[in-house]
Length: 271
Image (cartoon, rainbow, N blue to C red):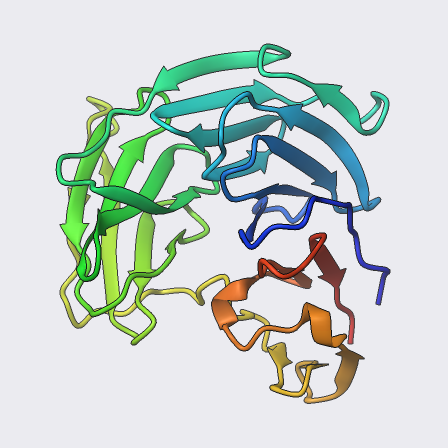
């Protein structure tokens, strides 16, 4: 197992937000509501770029040479430096910026709770609503920021939205296990995007990112188990959380997110 990737942040109770690129080459990291995004090169474990966004970040993702971030009523896209540039290159809001688009909030959004950006960087999913039970899953277009549609979240609690790897479906699973989804359909001739609403009994086609699609598990006493059940690593007490949504899996990578951590921890696992 490789050494964990980490970098320091000031102490806070807000969770880290870590999104992996679909090819598992990059990870984009920030704290919810903070202004700095760090893009990690997962092959080397080095920071590829650090971006001062100039806004509170609620969600972000990197793919290829692009970073997309969502802030308060704004969607911003940056170009990443090529890998032959100096590592840990610092950038500010205006450096290498491609677009800055207003986020046109869907009707009935209420307070914004969770944000996720699709792996193909085309769509933004937002869970918003009114405490304690009136929540909806909203979908926005990245290039225009416009609202594409919404669906109520059925259940007594809200959860984090997540996209299927192809970016064509977005789902929200509440803490009580209710699944709520949207299917994104694009007309190839007109380019018009519309939404389809899966049957209430249909379940997501993929494993949520807080559960390992490869069969890794974390026990209550802090052991990470491999596919065969072999103990791979024992997590220190400060790295543990009983809430499965306090972590994100992507293939062999595991990111620990809970707010008690002073720094993000990303592990690459090998059995």
